[in-house]
Length: 102
Image 1 (cartoon, rainbow, N blue to C red):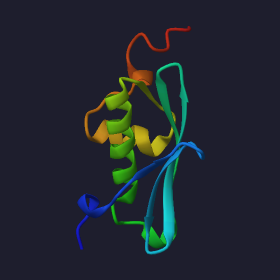
Image 2: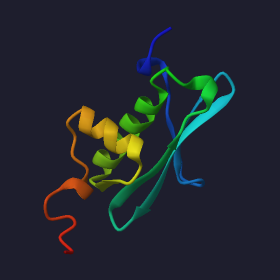
Image 3: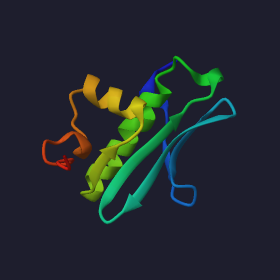
């Protein structure tokens, strides 16, 4: 009955996503990798798995993978952005000079 600690997130590079399968349902966090950048695009958790912190586990695994690779992390997905804000982590896309195109 544990939360995130019991989940095993796997990186599926062939489908460009981190995945977590529980009770026959697969949740995922889609990403794009290019030029030492990990862009977190979309998180999807099936209804049957909601409320179990599975989205959090996916985001944490993605952030750990990006950091271990030394990649610049860009959060496009609103769920990822909210998670990072709540946990006081700044994606590259929120850094002051990341989007000075005015």
